[in-house]
Image (cartoon, rainbow, N blue to C red; front, side, top):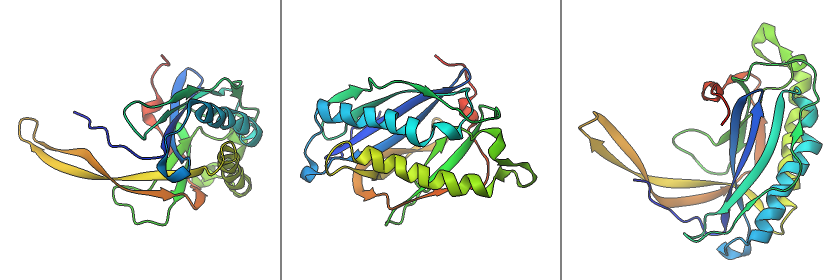
Length: 219
């Protein structure tokens, strides 16, 4: 059973969209400063509305028109009685040229000043429009990488500006490993908070990535 591990002053934002009929989510975390004080509903609403409006400004031109960013929702992770908010800003669709398969993705790695075991922090954006591909190398074009990386960094900077003292962060946890002989496996359970690392840099993978779990019909 999952155990709630508080992350003081940090909220989780889930960005929801569609590529055609296929749903995608991006899960992000932000520290609100203030010495770990809980987020308010008003501040969460300002944050998620900026997620949507800044996305339209910074990212819209990179995706094909079958990509839609529908909404963003936030929940405070400080305690078990959290403030929440759902964006009221408008949804938006891509304006780039050339459709790509919904299972493909653009991966952006979050660089943090912390050694991170279990995989590097990252998020998967929808695939860029087809005009940005270099199929000979199964990758994105150099011009796309040059343009998309500062656009992503700018998106996060805009989001941080929505509420004073906000930073994009990655919560790092400790885990307990237990043997499950019935199912012949080891179970990894989140047990505590190790650190809350501030993201220092964004690096776009030059390789076209895959997100096969997207290949399900939207709810």
